[in-house]
Amino acid sequence: MFVYMDHTATTPTSPEVLKAMMPYFSENFGNPSSVYSFSRKSRAAIEKARGQVAAALNADPSEIFFTGSGTEADNWALKGTLEKAKIAGKNHLITTQIEHHAILHTAEYLKKVEGVEVTYLPVDAEGFVSVEDVKNAITDKTALVSIMFANNEVGTIEPVAEIGALCREKKIPFHTDAVQAAAHLDIDVKAMNIDMLSMSAHKMYGPKGVGALYLRKGLRPENFVHGGAQEKGRRASTENIAGIVGFGEAMEIFKSRLEEDKKINSARRDKLIAGLLQKIPHAKLNGPELSKGDKRLPNNINFSFIGVEGETLLLDLDAKGISASTGSACSSESLDPSHVLLALGLKHEMAHGSLRFTLGRLTTDEQIDYVLEVLPEIVARRREMSPLWEEYLKSR
Image (cartoon, rainbow, N blue to C red; front, side, top):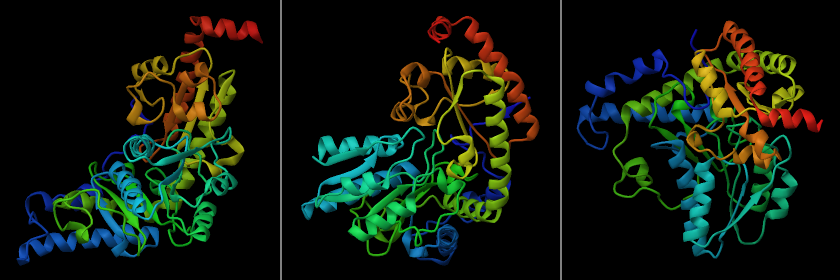
């Protein structure tokens, strides 16, 4: 049996999305920047997709700018905003310790190269940032607050609407990395007072290589990519027409299936969490506890198993046909423990023994049962060979 439970890393492009994309590879291939009628088909396709993405967020189509990825959208939001704010004498960025590396590495660049002051807010043991901490961190030099909508590793959904309201009151732009959240949650940028929001198509059964940045009307961060007049002069480069069309189609399908997918994924998520807690002694659920399902992404399960290396568990699971993860796909080759789990207060040995399962449209009830059958046996076998497990038992 093949079991794919790494939908947070990426999702398969759905057949409906692929069908919508196909004509723009070899039939309607015109450059949308050209003026003749053939190319106007490409332009119309892009604008249709822009409307589809905007509708899903309760935004205006003019506020949606397509990028090459969610990472690019994050870079644009941070670098573009801070570069422009420096002119007005503001050079302070507020973010959190558990952001995706697309935010953290960009913040480090801004700090090192541009002299930006960065405040990294802590989170509690379940991964929640405090709105009060955000408020207390704001100074007269604060140019941007950037806090992720939902964490990619432990699934914690942050109080985005409350943070957005605070930032609107303080007249400080608020950006949220919604690369994970936009694939699972209902987002209303107006009601939530969001000024900038990053997305990526391949997290929601769309193609890789295309993302988007929502920019509220009136905001004009410096351009991140220069060289042409595409995207209303805000993001140069010939548009990835097929990818953009796929993004729009994926977003529309996501919106139509939102409640159904959320209900199914949440039920399977809770079944897997409850089963692992019951079957594996001293297993630790990371992120919001089981009773706070509405505060966790509907497809996210993250556990730590004392006495076992997460990478070892991944190899054992792979041998059984199960694909999972130890954390963010962007750091999967790193041997360092997850910065997210360390920020939640886990010790290194616990953080090293973590596994993340993320469910999706490929997941079945039979697959959940299979994992519940296979994983407890793997953990028990590995613990029998682990000196760390022996030490842990002696210390109790």
